Image 1 (tube, one colour):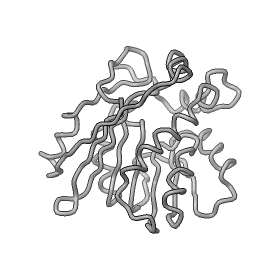
Image 2: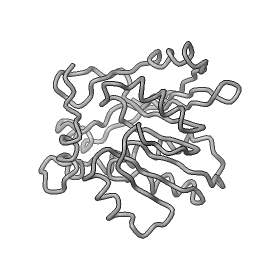
Image 3: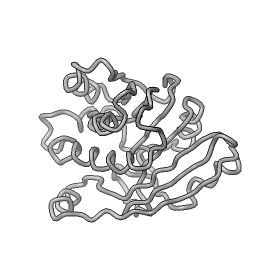
Image 4: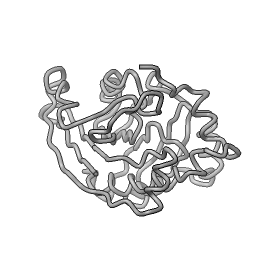
Length: 221
């Protein structure tokens, strides 16, 4: 399937003057909404002081949500879009505990926790990305749409269900558990969805190495 999710495509989507930019059609509020759900099941104690990497951070709006829960942690936001990271730096330049970098899965720093929210569904090599992320952290949380119908030529090219990550049990001895939540869409959210906002369902898998590693998925409809 042809993948439109190139760097040029997302640099354009993140530009403020684009009439259909990420910001203009509600991308920032979408990011915050899902971040609040993710925070509910992060396993760290409130005094966690390690490093959390938001991989595919877009305009960085999830990080203040994580920071409210874990004020002692250090944060790294990473995205392959120069435009997104430029805006992140402008928004959060005063905070010494937050760093933003342009990068890909090939130059991820070693960290304690990686969160990748609503990114995998855009990627052709999603399984390779998951394997690589697991190598670079102790804990990995993933958010993706649940049982989404894929339409040709759109941003989402992968659909996920409760069996999608079973391959990790065979290849990396990862056990999988699930939680299911529901999102009620407001009229505004439904209208935004009409204009191709990805206000979809959420799965959040949590990984840890065997004996130390497991996987927890949360579905939000």
